[in-house]
Image (tube, rainbow over all chains, first blue to last red; front, top):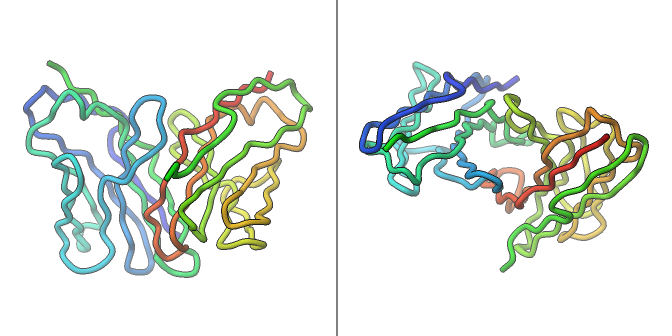
Length: 114
Length: 113
C-alpha cells in the first residue's frame, strides 16, 4: 500500500527566505508524485508532478521538487518566499497503474512573515 | 471552460436528512472523484469513477452513494446525514486514471447538526 508523510503540519518562514516542505512516500512500485497547493477557501491546484525522467521537477510560481528514490523523498522548495505563497501544501502519490488513485499527505500550512 | 463546478457552496443539514452534492466538469475527463477534507486529515477519497457507468469505492465510502450516468456529471448522495459527515467535500477530475493531474472544484462545506 502507498502512503505519504509530510513532516511538519505548520511551517513559518520570513519573506525572502528559503521554503522547504518535506514529503516522504512509501510505494511498492515506481511512484508518480505530486504537489498540490490550496489557498484559503479554494480547491486544490497542481504545483508540479513527477512521473518519469528528470528527477528535478519545476512547477508554477517558482517552486521545484526533487525525486530522490534512495531517500523515498519528494521535498518541495522555493529559493525566496513571497507573501502570496502562504497556503496549505499537499504531497500526493500514485502508482500510475490500475489502482492509480491519489493518496494525499495530511498537508503543511505555510505562513510567510513580512 | 468552467472546469469543475460544485453546488451548493454551503449546506446545513439535520441528522438523518438526505441530500445530493452536485459535481460537473466540461473538460471531457474520464476520471472523476470525490474527496472529503477534514482538519489535520488531508484529503480522503470517498468514491471514484473511471467512466460513465463505472464507479468504485475509495478509502471512506460508508454513508455515501454515487452514480455516473454521463461523462460530465458525478453527484454524491448522502442517504442519512450524520454529524461525522460534517466536512468540506471536493470533486475532482482528470483525463484518465493513469493521468492523475486532477482538477478540483471549489468545494462544498457541509454542516450536519
